[in-house]
Length: 357
Image 1 (spheres, one colour):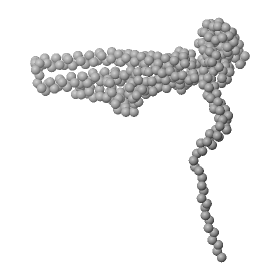
Image 2 (image 1 turned 180 degrees about the vertical axis):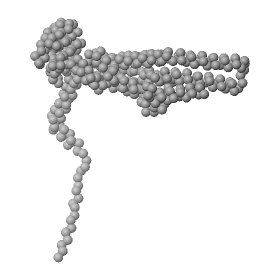
Image 3 (image 1 turned 45 degrees about the horizontal axis):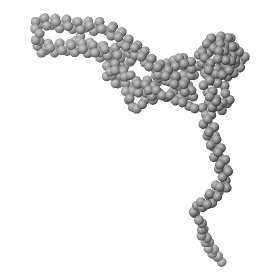
Image 4 (image 1 turned 90 degrees about the vertical axis):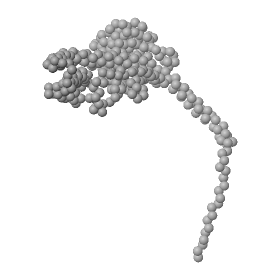
């Protein structure tokens, strides 16, 4: 006997509409939780705004000087298709140790003086109380190798004197504006702008380490494509210091650029001064040959074949003279072993062979 069981699903009825009244009642019931959480987040945001260390940025624009003198060798350098654009080379130069290292030396960035404050909230509290501008200007700070790992603290006694101590037992009293020398430590404090009993931690960093720090905080980009204008942006916590750093970087870049151009011009002038007598000698020889040829023919109205020979000689001398000036330009960029330089010398050799033949 087989029993068939029919299963039927009972229809499920429900209301999918949102009950606004119930939601409002839920919010009202939990109003203190909502108010408390909102207030807590608002207080956290306010505390962060007041005590967080602000980050500033300074901007500058630098125009790349177009090297028009290199147009003489563009026909030779065109084979170097992998050569990066001038803007990329200048960006690398701005971020180089040559430029940034001089900035570190000029501004004594390897010496860091930070005020001792309460952790996390101390710096923000000083800003609220108007004490964020308290500084000590240290321009000289050298340590013996045995003390490199020690932590030095500068205690302000008054605006004319200070006490320098370390966790290694070092202690000495110095005068503002006078060099302090004690146990191999040398320090010069130029000025004190802080209230008595203020404490500052004085640190000495390596020049290479500070260069790396500057590279991390410096961003150099080209504004647009092939505009020749570079945009420099430097970020940091000290608004006045980042302005000084960026100003120093731009000045040092422009200074080395002028020195580099002057050196290239001096080399070109020296090369031309060396080659000029030879060029003049070739010109005199060509003129003498021309005069001798005219006297031999006893006529200025030369036949077409003779004129062709003279035109060829003049053209060869012109090509040799042009190659001489090109060599003056290309010698600033490459050595004689470079393919471009070797190509130029080979062209000069061919023209000389044509002249002899």
